[in-house]
Length: 393
Image 1: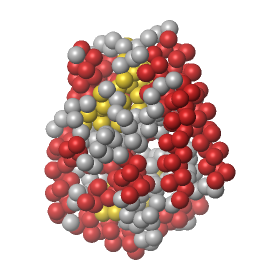
Image 2: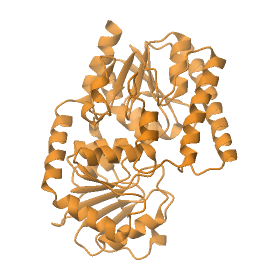
Image 3: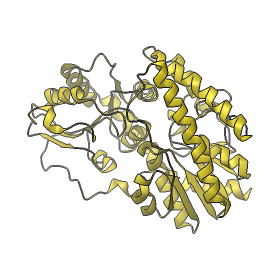
Image 4: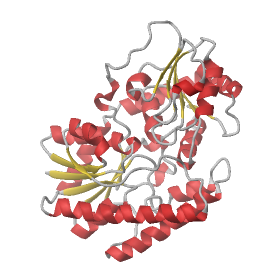
């Protein structure tokens, strides 16, 4: 069969799908993968053909006045329209047997309906159904009140989806609210999903699959007996030089061996003297580092959270935006780490939280149990099985 994949151009959206792509290709299927050109190497390494789709992810969290918000929504609509046109142009002459789309992409869902293709939603984070809405969860249960900008964004996103759906002659669908696709592949375990017991057979909670990314010769753990602390704020909202300076102050005494990813927007030379026990890079091969790490000081993006738990590594969360805040809250409520509020991330607070979580045997036991659960099922195989069964039935 021929599968078309469509993903938002972010590591946290593309990476969870690649082991599934590899598994489908291994079974003899063909995969076309529409996303930004910068993911060409990763997509082609998984065995798929890249369709270089327009559009990029924002590089900072919203902190905008109404004019900026309106401009962002206009870009969002334009990108969605371009995506619909791009997909229909490329898929009309090479019609797939199913369209597997990132649940956050409007273009993929709309094109599936317009072309009459089986619709398979890929959820790198929480799913939504008739009983649970991620939008409502983010708005109602944040540990701190959401800034007005986010509430405006959620409302404007709903309006944008409705308007664009009407223009394209399709049903309206909001990524944060639904309705669900015919089949939904969720790359987290049901145990981590809010209201997990309300989701029916349309949803397959396959959990993460790290694939071949756990082995990477570009990094090796230093040959010493120190515990390894991995620090990363992910690939999007990581321009936080003061946070990284606080990490140098907190962990520069040599008790930890530290691998710290600062992203492309922060120059390590601007952070001050680098202690000998720190290794600093733009990015590390994260799954490979987590296989060796003792603790993860993380922004708690869902991809990073799942990779950490799959590797059995406790988390101290320093979320940068609402969904990450929800992830950090789940980690804390399930006893697998701790969340630090945005106003409590001094060097002293970071050091105390890391030391306490590292010493907490119950946290380590809870994480080990979750890791056992995640490793007990091959998410890529389970997802491919579900897709094949869905299309056969």
